[in-house]
Image 1: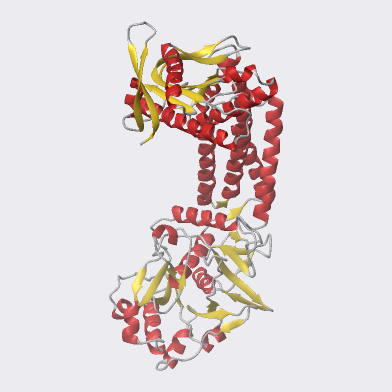
Image 2 (image 1 turned 180 degrees about the vertical axis):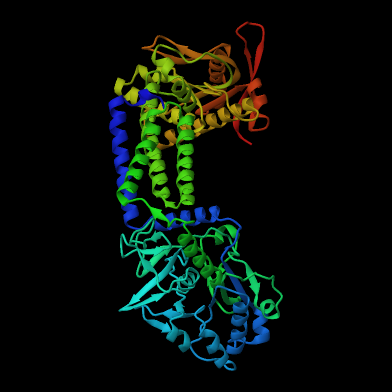
Length: 630
């Protein structure tokens, strides 16, 4: 949009007003939680896009498949579970986690399993109640040894798991999660160590890993009870190496496959539900990941924190997030208000918003969760709002410019004037054109006779009524009212800009014919209503040919005109209608030239009406009477 549409001061005032309004709206929407779903969807998309096809290095899954359950039965017996666990220990696993509830014995083999569970390297699972107490207990041997952890995983309101619950305090008791307990075994520790700088923060190795505060990242309302962290999903499913439990029992695994690893034993089954939806499901196409895979990912994350290979996900303070949104709103509005070219304006705005989205999304690979969605939303909304306001102002200016030339402007001419407005405003004129047009020349028959015995006010009201109605008919058929001739009207089809359709000359002729018939209906309707002092009689002449179109006059009195022999011929064809009218006695006579009739090509019913001598006194125009549409 050109800079002169708004003054500099008005542009600056509008820039600040729009930016402030959009900023407040976006912040209020975010505070109300109305953007949370969109922001979490963006988080999922980014996390999924950044995820790679690798697998956990320190964690291996031992899977019990559907076919194994068919052979071994469900629930799995203590004896079979003891065999699998023992085989993992014999393969030099650093720690083994059993992701199967065992709150009561499943004979046979309970004594055998108890003996295995006395090994401090083996961790079993429990389930927490809502108050943090234990709902489903671990085997008594594990409880006595403290070698158990809860398997609960927080779910967001959309059913997706993005967070890990590592610790829960139940009164004086501190419960560790299944993944945390296994990681502690790998790190050679029994309990997490508080950070010396802040005892509320857990120290993993030398890495302080703070818990999620309320409103972290894009969350608005989320239960952050206990010690929670964001789960990082660097890998797409399957997230960990998988060993078949049957192969483990039969010794059909590679030597050292489990050595020094954290081994998780559990089900990969569609009938025994242990499924979770995660952000990385979107890219992989998997409907869910198995609980084993999820726990393995969390264990690896804790180990990576402890090794210093992975920073905890962090977000910027809320005031700084709000500043990002404010700056985005200012930039978006500025692009719409201060760039001159509309195409460039949209390109810069959309390109800039996309670049910001990519940069803020890419920051997640560095561990930063930035407010990409509200920032881009503020950018685009402020741009669109400012652009719309400028467009409204521009339209009003377009109308003002049009009125400088003529009140009866077609949309095409208005557009041409607008596109050349800067040149016109310094004294330019619309570029002259050679046009092929269809012309409709209509005249109110008998108006001179009526004016001789009428009062001026009555006569002008009588004329205005019919000319306004005829002008409306012309507009309805996309005709350009080139001029009012006192008691008549000249309408052009194909001017001031050529018709952009196939066979434009035919399209223009048919539009002119349809307009003439609509004018006949208008005259008959006005006469039938009987609201005027005198009945109307109308003659219409239709002709086609070449004309010159351009502006005539100075900058203070400029008018668009069509000039050429075609205009004169159309007027003469209208006058020719006098003889036809005398014979037929109709209120409306519509005559056209043979050239015009040929363009109609079966569009209307025609009757011969005679011949009209050309201005050169030699050639003749064959004239036809238009009766109606076929």
